[in-house]
Length: 240
Image (tube, rainbow, N blue to C red; front, side, top):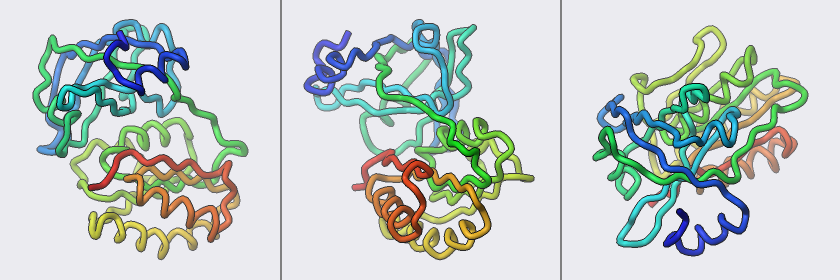
């Protein structure tokens, strides 16, 4: 199944990645720029199991070259063999495929590299920084960490996006995307230190565009001194 995927496919084969064929069963536009697809999993969940923030790689054709992007599973149901995927729509092969996807369409997926470890000790406060691309992962994270309160700095989007949050425990601080993420960096630097002072066991989750993620990860670890085991930082997309 991984034939024709170039060097990325070859590396994943060497790492014993598992391949599956997914089938679209339904599609819905949550907002004009955010689309949810429902899929059957081709045996994926039975073969791999499920964990919080679990993600898979989807393979797209892009100018006749293989192109893969990672997406977090939404509402995985191992018994039914189904889950959903949510796409923040912009320009690119993945968004083009998601816009056109209809029931019966198929796409190849690879599982390799995903994982989740519960932070220990349990967080006294979760500090998440993300955007529409990482919203499914943030939703999954907050559900996995149970009663911990959370502050979420969320860049772009609006309240119509599918936040799975509890207003009694989760505060969403919306930040417009400006200056290629610089406005988000400035806002977090202005507000995060005061929140950290009030929590003995913080857990910081940073999933923005790659450049913003690097800047905030360095700030949290080097300038604020948060131990690396209490910080998860992963760039979810490349800004252009």
